[in-house]
Length: 120
Image 1 (tube, rainbow, N blue to C red):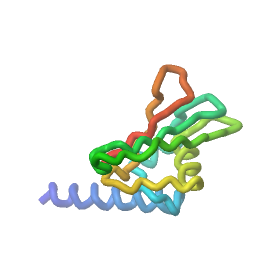
Image 2 (tube, one colour):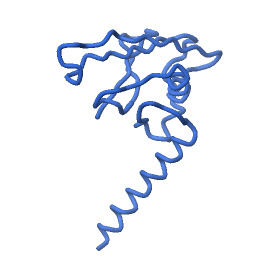
Image 3 (spheres, one colour):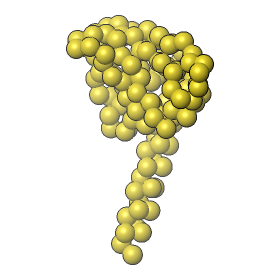
Image 4 (cartoon, rainbow, N blue to C red):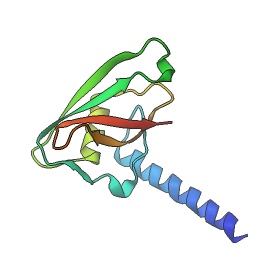
């Protein structure tokens, strides 16, 4: 019986976290799968970074789409939250099975080029 209560509580906690994220970052055309407590994690100390969105997964079959490049600027550090806000403002649409944004991966050490990490 304890297991059911724990599972129910975990699910309720998940829903509450998603609601909090969706309230603070509304109108996303993708699902934010970054934990709420990691939204303010710094991903770059640089003032300008570029986010690459590659759409070449199996969802597109033999017709991959061109890579999208989003420029993100800040007068301060760049956090997950800032990048997500900018991607929402720039109307990023993830229209395949991989619509869950899980984070951002720096392509080379000390680079200002990041790739969006998505899942399904």
